[in-house]
Amino acid sequence: VKTLKHLVLNTDLIPFKVRVDGEVIRLKAINRTIRSKVKLYKTDDKGVPQKGIKYNLYDRWDNYLGTYETDENGYIEVELEYGKYYWKEIETLENLVLNTEEIPFVVDADGEVIKLSAVNDIIRSKVKLYKTDDKGVPQKGIKYNLYDKDNNLLGTYETDENGYIEVELEYGEYYWLEVETLENLVLNTEKISFIVDTDGEVIEFSAVNDIIRSKVKLHKTDENGNPLVGVKFELYDINDNFLGLYTTDENGDIELELEYGYYYWQEVETLEHYELNTEKQYFEITEDGKVIEFTMVNIRVPDTQIKDNRTIELIGIIAITIGIGEFIYEFNKEKRKDKKKK
Image (cartoon, rainbow, N blue to C red; front, side, top):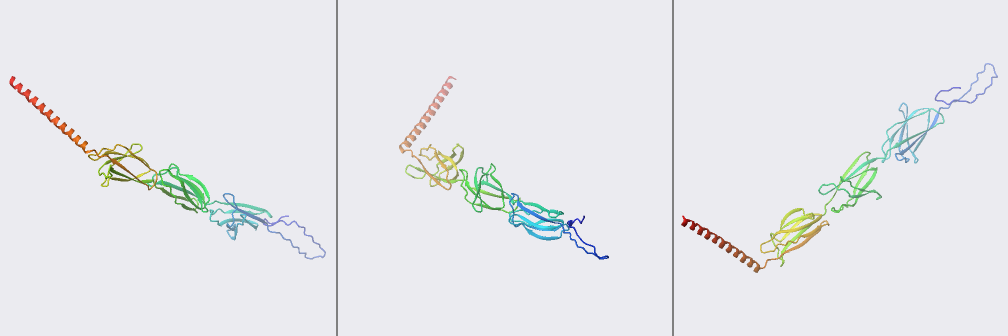
C-alpha cells in the first residue's frame, strides 16, 4: 500500500498458504526503481535541428554520468532512474555559440517522458564597409554585391551618406564586389573577402575609388607651327571658377593633370607682334588615364601693320611734342606782356 519515493508501488497480490504449524514461509516481492525517458532536443536560433552537439550528464552531486551527442534529428534520448540531474553542453558546431546554461531536470514519475529543449545561437558579426575616394572623402551611392564563398549572390547594397554599408551576417566566408560607382570615380574591381567566425565581432574595412584623372597638353604655336614661349593662359571650370594661371614653356606647352570635370582655357597675354587669341578652348575629362591634347594658334601681326602702328605712334609723339611747345610759347608770350604793362 506504500513504498519508498524512488520505487514503484508493487500492486501485485502475493498469495501463500499456511499448512504446517510453526513453518517459516518466505515470500519475495520486488519494487522497480522509478525510471523515465529523457529527450533533449537541440536546435539553432532558426529552429533547425542540430546534429553532433555534445553534452555531459551529471547527477545532483555533480557526479559525471556520461557524454552524449545529438543525432541527425537533434535529439539525445536516455532512460534514467529516480533522481535529480542536469545537462551541460561541452561542445557545439563551429557555426554556433556554445550554450553554457545548465539544464536541470528531475526524474520522479515512472514511465514519464521528460522533454527538454535547448537553443544555440548562430555566430553573427556586424560587417562595416567604408568607402572613400583617393582623397579620403566618404562616397555615397556606390553599389556592391555580396556573395558567399560559393559565389551565390546574397544581395546588393549601397553606401550611405557617410560612405558606409553595414550588415549583420552569419558564420561563413563572404566577399564584396563593387558593381557600380559614381561618374567621377574609377570602378574598383578588387574582391573584398572576409570571414565571420566570432560572435558579436565588428568587422571593419575600407575601400578606395580613384578619382578619374587625365593629362592635359596645350600646345601653343604661330600659324607656321612654331612654338610660342611665354603665352599666358587662365584655367577655369565650367562654372567660371578660376583655377590657375599657366605659361607656355620652352616647347610652347602647358602640361598638367586634372580631375573629372569640364574646363576651358582663356588666353590672357600673348607675345609682342601676335594677336591675342580670345577664343575659349573647352574640354572635358571623363576617362581615367587619357591624354587630352590640342593646339592653339596665335596669328602674327603683319610687318606693314607694325610699321603703320609705329608711324602712328611717332606721329602721336610729334603731335604731343608740338602741342607742349605751343603751350610753352603762349605761356611765355603772356608773361612778357604782363611785364610790359608793369
